[in-house]
Image 1 (cartoon, one colour):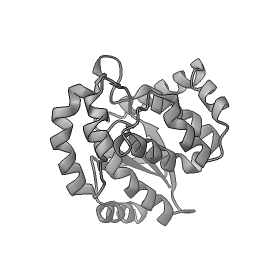
Image 2 (image 1 turned 60 degrees about the vertical axis):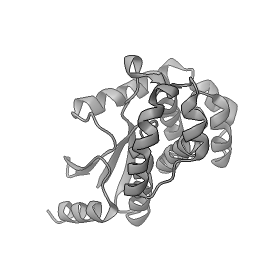
Image 3 (image 1 turned 90 degrees about the vertical axis):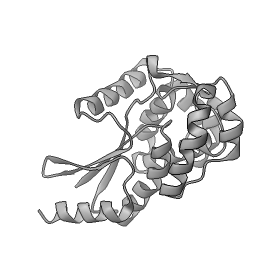
Length: 207
């Protein structure tokens, strides 16, 4: 069986849900493989400056924290969200595409590290410097990785992921799909507690 986690690097609810997927991945190691896809939430006309999201996120983050147990950092809430940095899903999504070429088994962890860099440390995912300590953590050659982020092939592969997600009819994030015997089951649409996920996974396993 395979669990497909569909997330967006800019999505606050995804920031709260990724730790749940990390726990599921660890618990079912050797039984359920985990793949992560980027959904492309903020692209083209949907991109916006962080400051334009300040009033919304300063209230909405409280519900995410209360529901998921995740913490948003002061540098994100009171510094980043007052900046004109463009909240854009493309670059961190390309980064995930490239990371999966190196260490697919750690892709969910890498995604969460990007989320922490943004939502806790208040760093821009448009800035190459943000990726350097994360790549060093995984012993990935930094300059080669950053060079690959400029390659058209990786941009194309990332856009293919966005298209797959659209074709599945998934427009909200996070989401999770369980694949069993070539059948796809939507097991999470929006944040879903671990206990509920485990229940649904067991039901599908026993079909």
